[in-house]
Length: 191
Image 1 (spheres, one colour):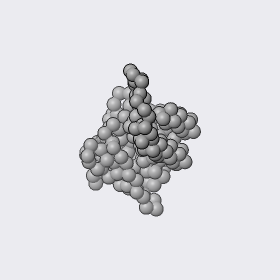
Image 2: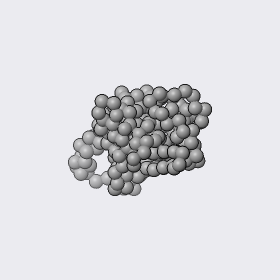
Image 3: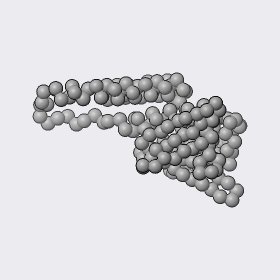
Image 4: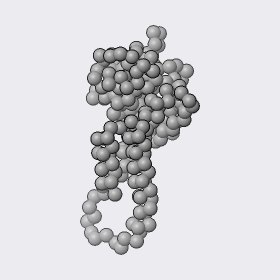
């Protein structure tokens, strides 16, 4: 698709999907809909609500943006509101289903490799956002460990699931080896 010279983060994301996207106008206008301090991580093309446009995953939200000659459409899903993501694909295209605030949004006709990477990265962001934080140190000595042992299989399953998702993201190329190592260390540190 060529160099856009819009902004370094947008240019880098656009280069990863060239030439399959065909959303030059949306890429050029994307900075006008981004918030201050918001950076673009990944881009893909897709259709939502009957119109084709650009899907942008940023550090704060998932955005669907269509900038037409006569109209503009913007739908966003803050990462904190997204509870889960589903990806289903055929040979070349697929559908990214986003579940947020009790609603489901289907972004269709997403090119398969871009949709797989986008959904994997989004899952990883959701998993790390929902990761439990380390509890504060107890004020008094803890009771016998029997109740905590009963919860251990769930914790182990959660960690195993998060590590498996992380492995899938690395295999799909959605994260770099450095990001993989950093997030793996964070998951293991949460045990």
